[in-house]
Length: 313
Image 1: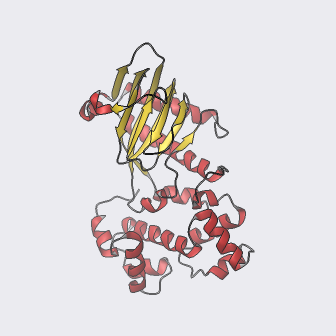
Image 2: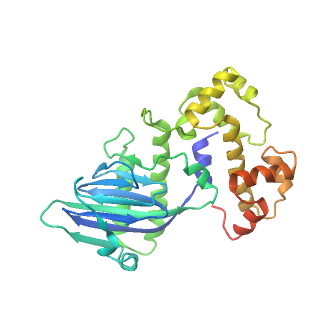
Image 3: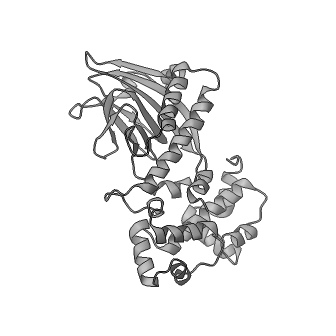
């Protein structure tokens, strides 16, 4: 089973606005954010920070995905103070022109494509929490391929031309970059990585266990059975899983079951809760309902009602 492909089918992005930022140094701005953010540096360089994270240096050809920022800043040099972007251009103006320009002086120019989007499925929050605050794909990184840079250039061209249908094209292309960002998270071997089941997919035994659970969420998995399937002792498996993923195997299984359950409700609104319970490993609606409320924060009935109008993605 391709776990990443399966996850992306449940975690589609919905682009809401993309536009260009054309700045001349010196510049320093903070941007409000309540959804995910994509940033593509098409020319020049700048420094990015997200919430309270350290500054990250960006150069032309870099792509950045910010899963859940409250705010972020862009500046031409680390020592510069920042002011609100709204002092330069209103949100209404950006929506209309898809362009913000700022001439700070005689310094180098930096061109950026910035976009904000939301995740299509409400249960995506369970998946997003396993991502770092900044997913940075460097233009010169090992992941770089001709199609990666071509996609960045195509997005920049579509945003600049602002032609009919351009938003839909940019949204689809950005989603391709989003998948590549998730790939990089799986393949990353940085010692600073926080625990994450995406990163743990790279571990032969823990990755196999995760794939087993995701492939058959309705199976009555036990800790012993999972350990046997990946040729590990129960204690060693439990310890390594928690170290790499940041939660116990059965806690992870429960969360994945609820993601699947939420997706089933949206994909097939008339489906009975008893069927969903059985498909996600519960013998009764009651036990399923308790688990759903604990993980999702609402009852299955309220979840179904609040998401009745969401189309399957």
